[in-house]
Amino acid sequence: MEFRPDHKFVVARRFKALRRKATLSQSLLGEIIGICRQSISEIETAKVMPHESTWDRFCDLEGKHKQPRMRLPTVWR
Image (cartoon, helix red, strand yellow):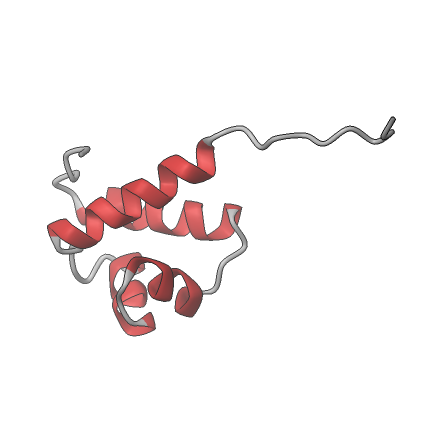
């Protein structure tokens, strides 16, 4: 997995950016990666660093979200 950045603010920015891009609430992001909403809030405000296992799950989600979406044809034959 990707190494976790040393600075809390870099991690906070990545969490916020993914959550906003994916239009997820803190609660839903927390549910997806297995932590509570309060933990997401503390990470996004740079109060704490995520645990390594949380970071790994976040990076998996971030990687999946960056993959191109499959486009379906508009006309079916």
